[in-house]
Image 1 (cartoon, rainbow, N blue to C red):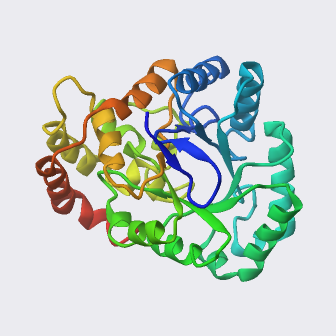
Image 2 (cartoon, one colour):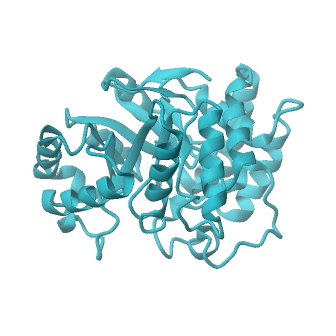
Length: 328
């Protein structure tokens, strides 16, 4: 497991982290026992970065993380959480220092800490990125000690580019995978130039890039791959990376041919992401210990060849880009 400096912060993190959305909710039935086992397995495998949010299971994810870390003791990994999606309605006007501080206080309690390592604004409406007062408020919260650092989780490349204009923003979380390649065109270059940590989410396109989903796969009613297929609950780009399901399945069959013998398609997809040196950490989720161990093992795969990278790009350009490249 390789490690990277986390942008301008003192933290160093493993290149594969742990995305804790699945152990919170919206991925079907994941028991607390399985959630704890998944997180423990990731930490045992050398993961030193955990990403969660206050809305994942209405705090369940944060509480599981607190419980696991307390029971393990020893050196703590970096724990990043997010704030803002508790707003109802979720509108730009709600993104005030007072509201964010209220959410931070709740996360401090859930995670059982005195200061949060990293707080990310949780995919706020686009107007929020043009509100200097909010970022000044985040800086005040940092100076007050409630948070050590702050960043943003974005839906679109344009939002990422605007966010890193604020000097206090240390990280950007963004979707990047074989099916969502636009961030590499400009944003990654700017992030690297400004020493911004890049957190990659949805690395497996909600499981499509695991190669295990078929046209006949059934998702439970409480799984976002069922209830958000067309963006009914939140941005459709979060579900299957915004790629129409049937198109995604077709592209998967082309990508499958590129996977080295003995490697899983999921590991290949994670290794593809790590080929870009601008990526600080990728945060696949896991429903159980087996998935967590498999995710961490992707770091052991050798670098992908230029021919393989080109073939993956060709599949993206032909099948996927017309549906997603201009949107996010």
